[in-house]
Length: 294
Ligand code: MG
Image (cartoon, rainbow, N blue to C red; front, side, top):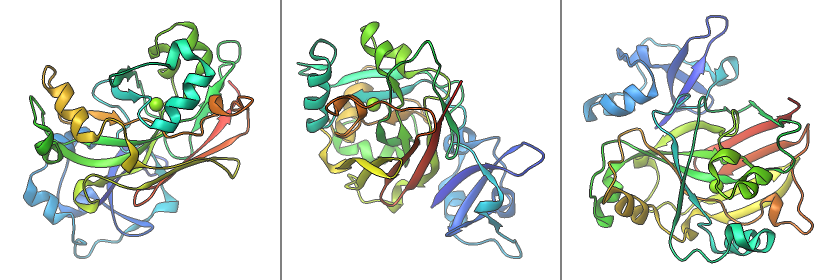
């Protein structure tokens, strides 16, 4: 099942839609359900209600996707996004080449968080922040969304806690990331977390996900990997963190990015105004953003 958050003009109200036929959405209320937002749905939907969403409601007319404004599926994450740094081997090499002190020699998983006041969306603009950011970069990542509270979960049971998957662009200001020697600021600027276009529920993707993951800039393929190549796997992430930290339902985990980011190019090549960044993961879709002046 593919779940969207969308707006119909001109009311500006976020609604949840279910894409049962490619290119069109049934509104949640067509199924006789009401949730305040996607977080509320993730935390409170019952298995019976989930089943009900798999069949088109009678007498309801789907809305063409191109007639609505897509939002991030979770516009306001309940907490900071949990992120993995350097979680693909080839990206580890290119990042260390760019700045060994900031990125080299990390024997254990790198966890950090990303503040998201409001998630950016498919079609949204990534701000440049002239005078603050001089090295803007992209990072396509598989996003994992938890469906129930996870505490002390063994790796072999981690799959049971996953609600679904999405695409995240972990947009990064490299000068802030390396200059402050701590990644939070450079990755948490407003607009630096595009998420979307939708959530694909966990039942639709074999576990662990082995999906093509790509990012292109102005049509030029820059990143081209497989989510099967994570150094720390999704099961290991959930097991390790939940040993001493409650991962609440609705938690979003950005699992790291494959090689091919701008700082890894020789010479480094960062995003400029007008660049079009398209992140893509098989079975989920595409997430496209334009870099804008600010
Ligand atoms: Mg990242």
